[in-house]
Image (cartoon, rainbow, N blue to C red; front, side, top):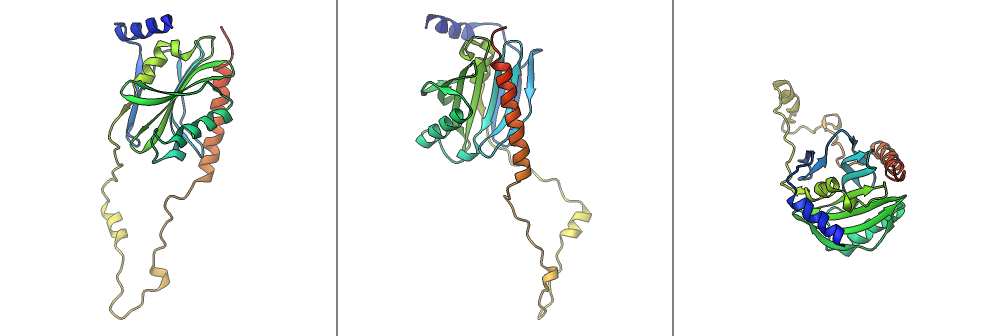
Length: 235
């Protein structure tokens, strides 16, 4: 307990600024300062039917991993909803993590539900928070015999989570050719519009199963790679 307190005080008063790469998502209105340096390797975005990994990095020297994900299956809920904690707990258990209860904490500018976890030798936490109508998780793991809570870089990254306004994408102005194509001929009075002239609307929100399948495969690969790196034991 004393060692952990000393670590927190050192993080608060240390004049040394660890390298970090600011990452932001205009789509979800969140940002985080990812650990950045020679030993940190970025992970690609991955998508599954229940979550979307937005940003992540791994450190092969310290066997550490950090990632930020949005829980797409929990959109519209808040962390006060008991179903959120149960859903995250279920997903972590299915992924092979051993969970040691959970509690609510404050870190940075956000309130979190924190799950202490242990998976394949990797120790750390998974934190859950809500923002802009979405549920986000931050995963911090270390597998060299130390806990992620003892890693200054991971703790700084976890506390750097920030919320901003969601920026709606703006479409570029239409060219004269596109404008002319957008004009639809109106039938004259007394004429019946033929089926051929009626535009068939494109279904919106249709699920891209191919993308989900590819994303799921990527996520499984990332988890296996992370477990292989993070859970490879002491160096």
